[in-house]
Length: 298
Image (cartoon, rainbow, N blue to C red; front, top):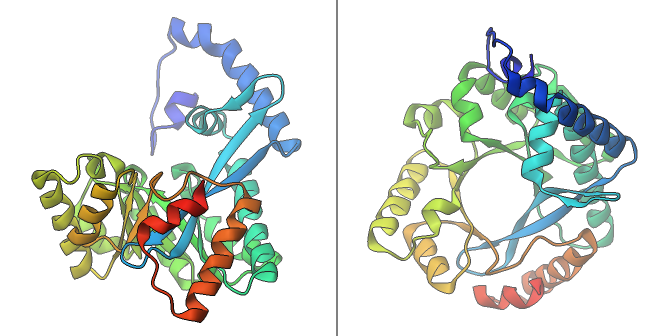
């Protein structure tokens, strides 16, 4: 049933021995997930994105983490897949969205400057027609304006559920929430999809950034940036780990850069120095070298 439900539309899957062997593990995972959500064991860390030219903080991406009691850190790849498989992704996604909005509100009350925060959205969340309403209610409850929230959807989910994704994106735009396409260039790319979805941002997958500054890799990234510019889309390069990659991505047309070169994901309290530095730089008119941001993320 779970395998069939992961396929959009109507489908059926016949039982196999592998399902029987994995049933006890799946039940244990579901029970652990339910308990983890009820006990608020999941939390967010935040990875900075910087302006490709000035090096200033421009936004943050919220990334889910789970420190499971008695087990330790569980990979997001594992628990997100388990949440989708067991039907708990809606509850978990709602809890993480609320946590992110509460953190935005806290930063806005604490600092003179704040930046938008991006939250990842599961394809299954987009299948819920009530999702845009849920986002609007969460923002209102937390006292956060829609402009401070960005939702990142995956390229694969958009392709598989194009009609419903288009409707959801339009409704999210209507309430003022920005929508970005994550992992762009991973093999599902559709030029017509980019034209139809009316997104705000595309994030170039790290697989295309990693080979920079190789000339052929630069050519691919530049082509994406030129297409994005024609469609009035902002471009973020993710997975930037070296100064050479940063320079090549910037020169190819990427507006924002994200990766270990600037900072690893930070605990909420460790974002404070970034927001303080942003306020100082903007007030003084200082232009920061992109590599200076590395010191803030260590």
